[in-house]
Image (cartoon, rainbow, N blue to C red):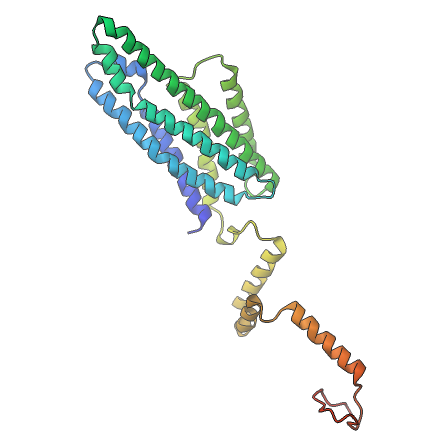
Length: 290
């Protein structure tokens, strides 16, 4: 299995995991309202955030394969990978802080009157921290999609439709978050995750369909054609396998052939062939025709 296919599987798996997380993710209102099902909601909160932490390294592996596929001298894919790694760190921070939500909710509900207000303030501050990390993840991941989409358009190695969708998606999400008109809740963040997951799943499907010979994007086009020609010759002409292997190993090179031709011409100019060997030099060249 090639690295492209492994990366495609990682992107699809991580994106599906994020979709499952946002489908089952309870909100702070659900924790406060479900007094009789608080234990189940607390368990569900811990489960979905554990799944989220496990999905992020998988997504980074897929992003690494995508960046290697789009590698170019402009380093747009590398910049996208760095920005996406920054986004995943913010997502990990949001998931880690979310583990405190059930305990803070229980404390805010069961605390006595003097400490109840402080418990509610701690609960609200935790929610603000989670939303801040979620915004950071949203903006950084959208910026990474913008960079990857630009790299796709410049390299033309993947479908241009995916690049256009990624450019529009990243720009709209960044403008929506930076406008600051509304605080993103669970449903708003779920919409962002859904739209980004569609892009990542499509990219993963394209990587899964890549052929084995498309694994070396950094090779020059001339060398790639030479390797393909040698492979075709080996399949169609079995007697030339040894010769092709010697060429690949560098035993016979263009420089050596050129040196042999130059030496032969020099010998013809310095020692022209005659009927008698006056110089007493052993003539190893081909005999002259009568």
